[in-house]
Image 1 (tube, one colour):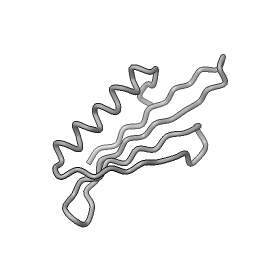
Image 2 (cartoon, helix red, strand yellow):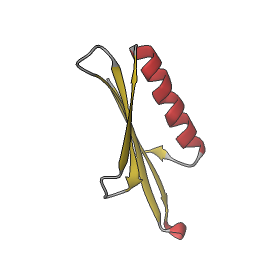
Image 3 (tube, helix red, strand yellow):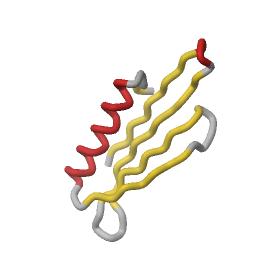
Amino acid sequence: MSCQLLHRIDTDLNMARFYRVEVTPDLFGQVIVERRWGRIGSRGQYRIASYPTTSSAEQAASTLVRVKERRGYRAA
């Protein structure tokens, strides 16, 4: 499906973060939106949410990306 990787790097604040959003189907007919975030170079944390349709999952993923872009994250 789709995967977006965002970075926010600010050397003055010693900040190097990533945010990844991936949309994939699961084995039960649902569509999964996986979010992973943390410091660049680490495994980070993650959260998974399931949606009944691809369009609803894509819409949720694009909303998450838009929110992060407003906070200073940029496409890697």
